[in-house]
Image (cartoon, rainbow, N blue to C red; front, side, top):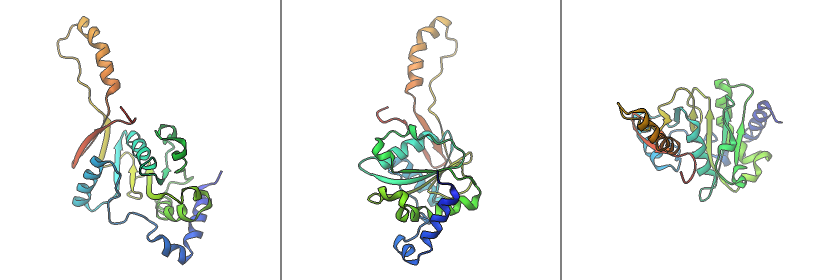
Length: 221
């Protein structure tokens, strides 16, 4: 298995060639603009956040993984068919939660760096597009459009989307109406199944000072 040191070496070797740098444009990918997620509600909120802060990264806190799985599933599946890289700094990312066909899952590149220092993360993010364009390990995705990088466990703004304990967009379970005050035990038992069904059907609520939305992780929920 290739280590993060091997990957860094390959990235730096590829991008040391001026022809490669010119061909790839700006390898860092997303400086100075908001990366479109193809989720309309999220795009709108991210644009408002960028307008007020000039910070392009989408930073997600709370129970952030369901939103990441949904986003990745949408990006790599038809009709978008993009490719992207996930830097999993804390080992929480579970690729089996991505709801897409296996043929599309192959275009999600997951790296778990041995070191997660800010410098290492910045280097991996800055060089990710060059790696996707020129490294043999990613040749199967050359026909796809590069979307960007998702950093899980990052504390800074490196990456197009960052998921950690501190973020301006917070994800929690969608609230479910509790039992009414003064309800009897018999009434509670009668309503228990309906309430459990409501809990099972509940989605996820993303909230921020710039707005919010509710989503379901699985397609068709």
